[in-house]
Length: 415
Image (cartoon, rainbow, N blue to C red; front, top):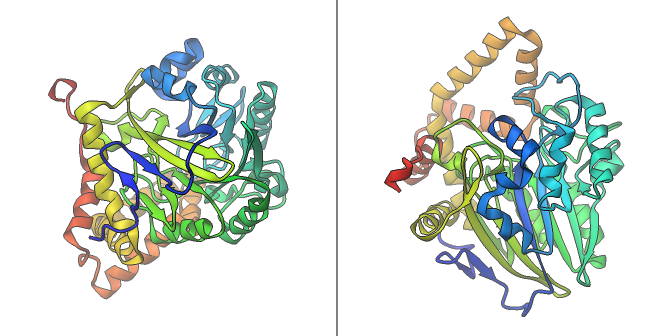
């Protein structure tokens, strides 16, 4: 397992410092998936500040707050047929954003169009009425791809947001997200670079629940870093993934869940981290990782031994990311863990949906062949099954995949 690609990162504190930038003029905080669903629905509607727990002061001490709005906030609407679950919040949930307040939401994700273009349009209006700026999706391809430029304490910040465009939600001739077009992302970063002091790229992509980024995602992030991004942030995996420093550019592949409740006792789906970034007119000065746990009523900061354990786990899944060989080996570990049984179960699920709800089954199968995360997974795994190498991954890679997919959260008293 390689240990390169982590230059300057202090695993005891969760901090990376850029030796070439002496002082921050402002600090921004980036959070991942936010959706007022399940256990958090009524909490956010009634007492919006409460859901953040003791994470709220961390958010408020920063100069700019960015979060991924993972659903529409709209009144009555009908859901679309799509591969996975559908999410929608209510207009009242906007106060869960303004209570912090979050000034920017990223919209390039796989749920913001779950209730169609009209619910999305209503969401844009609601955000605008509450002075929340957005990036990554729009009523046209031009709007979806448009970067967001913000001036903060004399620092010009450029934000580019894209996703995999799951369920064919990428904008082409109408409403949609900035979908999977790495060339276009690279072009966008290069276009804004001369006019900003700090370039942030946020991506919603990758395979859910696994500890490592797929090779195609890591390659895309390296290209974008080389185009002039100062910091890359990923989410969508719903679990924390590792960190890489690529030619001086920090990459956080997945922040895990944020205000996004899942009914599960699996440990890593209940953990996440914020990224605090110090910015100045000369670039990125530092990155601070802030880990937390997601409870049934609110978030809770990890401290002491819990924080140390979190960083030890994050270090384990960061170590292979320093080169292509390590990333490929890590990915192979997941393919081995998933194996032939995983394919049988997944195909059986799709066929069952085809029988019971043909439109749902069709949406699931279409997404498997149209979206990078599924297509790369299926092609790579089936190829290895055919050539007999599916079980040949390094043991550490398979063990980490098993841990991330199955380890349960300890009882509160056992911590």
